[in-house]
Structures are given as structure tokens and as C-alpha cells.
Image: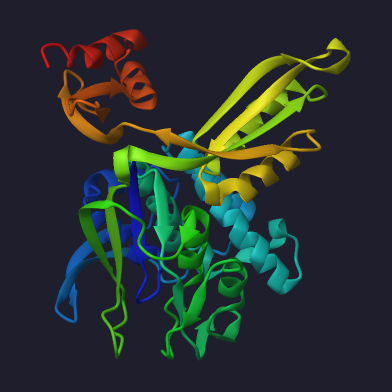
Amino acid sequence: MKTAYLDCFSGISGDMFIGALIDAGLSFDELDRKLQTLPFDGYHLEIRKEARNLIVGTRFLVIPDKKEQPHRNLHTVRDIIDQGGFNKAVKKKSIEIFEDLARVEGNVHNLPPEEVHFHEIGGVDSIIDIVGTVYGIETMGIQTLSASPLPLGSGFVKTAHGRIPVPSPATIALLKGVPVFDSGLHHEIVTPTGAALAKGLASSFGPIPPMVIQNVGYGAGKKKLPDRPNLLRILIGHQKTEDQTDTVVILETNIDDTNPEWLGYLMDRLFDAGALDVVFLPVQMKKNRPGIQVQVMGRPEQRDILMEIMFVESTTLGIRFRYGQRKVLESCVTETDSPWGKIRVKKVTNTDGKPFLLPEYEECRKVALENNLPLKEIFYWVMALNKGK
């Protein structure tokens, strides 16, 4: 399983996050093309190689043509993201992160989230930072993301609301439940956008998990810090445990009084939260009533959040859970040349060490639609690559 770890020794911001992904291999040209599908203009993107304490990283810059940016509300931001040329998962996660920002900003200013007018975080740069980061994680095939505890600065920062303390009230509110510590720096090193991305994308915070490192990227921050290089480091690799086994939590509940249309939404919510698998099974319940058994598999640290979604989005009154072991084949997402250009496929290594390729549904669907071809033709072409191996 492809995994990544954010080493936030100098904090985190949106531009540092994207810079680290680009430094680790995300295509800047493809990212730029995708971001240009968002319905606004008046800016251009640049990347630069810059050194911090002799460590070279990638600095990502959004350079607006006009200094003044409109103050956008949550509804406007949703519309902008919805109109972009991104897949459903990227749009959904990006909007969820902005909704978290609106919620905490609303609490700070005693306003409903829909009435919050974003200032700094509603600008073109923050929208690009959030959507671009979510797109980068998805495009690079990163399935799980964890992060180090976050160092916080102190002092004051000038905003549209005047001088406010560091960390900002929005940043602190976003980081509830996240381990933090005092960096000793009188600088803002965890921005609201950075906090929202870390909280929205990382499944856990702590030390580096067991992994085989394949790529390392450094995202350069704007400021030069007095006691450390202002960089965000991302480690990308594969989780590897003995015999490729790991521990999972299995959640189960039986439901006989729910609207069937709600089940699809429940499944989407669970997968968006990081569930490894979601299965619906027909069952006969007491008094011979037909019902549905919901089975959810996740990582042990995801138990509470997955259970909360099941309680909120279904009619269940109780959930069974147990822990088990599973053995998985090593896999990763790679690219191969095809008659239709580069195409993403899943590369799986069998128990005998031999690799084979599997089609990725969303990628095959995209190719089929773009070329007016049957979906199965794309699937068969990918499967044919395994002949003779």
C-alpha cells in the first residue's frame, strides 16, 4: 500500500504541501493544466528550486495579477470547486476541507458557516493550495497519509481582521485532537490552510510508520527561520510489515428500517473517511424481516470515526466490532504507454514475486469516454499486458 508521511519540523502551509508533492514527483505541468479548469483567472503559477540551510526544496507560488482578492463565502467556493475539471473524490474532499474552515471561522466570529466571508483563505491562492494538494495526493496514488506532531509558533500576525495571536483562533480550532508542541519561534509556521489540510488528509499523527521509502520531497516556505530550515518534508513509500500482514478492525451492524437510497451515501462517507472496504449483505432478521448487514473494514485507529459515520448516516442503534489480521499483496499505481497515451494501472506483486497489472476503473472510464470506446476494450487491453509474463 502506498503511504506518505509529513515531517512537519518547520510547520505546514498549503504552498509548502504542494511544493513537497512536486518535489517528490507530482507533475507541475499536469497540475497547472488541471487547476486552470477552475473558473477564475488573473493569476499564474510558478515553481522555483530554493535552498533553506543548504537543503534544496521546491517552492510553489501562486502569483495573482491583482493584489486585492474578493471575499468569497462558502457557497461561492463550493461552486468554484464543483465547476473544476476534477473527479468526484477530489471535489468532495476539497469542499469538506473548506467546510471545516467555514465551521471554525463561524465559531470564532459567532456566525453560521454559510455566512462566513473568507478573507485570506478565500483567495485564489488558498483555493489552489487546497484543491491542488488533494488532487496531488489522489494523482500520486497515496492511499494513507500520516504526519508528525505539529510545532506551533507564537506572537501576532496581521490579517484582514487586524492583529491576531499566533496560532490564529481558526488554526487552534482546526487542530483539536491533533498533537502539537511549542516550537519556540515567534512566527506563524502552521497556517489555517496548512492545519486544515493536515487535519483533513492525515489519518494519524505520530512517529514515522513502518514503510519502505521510495521518494522524498521538500516544500520550501517563504520565510527564513532563525533556527531551522523552513521546509516541509514528505516521505512516500509502501507500508511493509512481516509477511505483508496487518491488523484491521471489522465493524458490523444489521439494519431493517433504513431508506435504501441512504446506503449509497453511507458507503461514500465511509470510503471518504478512509475505510478499506464496505460491504452490504442481505439478511433475514427477527420476525423474518428482510434487512441489510453493513460490514466495514478499516485500520484500528479509524474505528471511532467510522463508527461515528455509521451512527450518523444510518438508523443503527448498535455496532459490533472486532480486530483481525489480513494478508495483502504488495501493490502500487504506475503508468504505462497505451494507444491512447499514458494510462495509470495498478501493479501488483504476487506471492512468488512476479508482478502483474490490473486496470484502474476510473482511469479506464476516463479513457473510454475521451475516445468513445467501450469500457471493456480498455480493461481487456490492460489485462493483455500480462500475457507472456
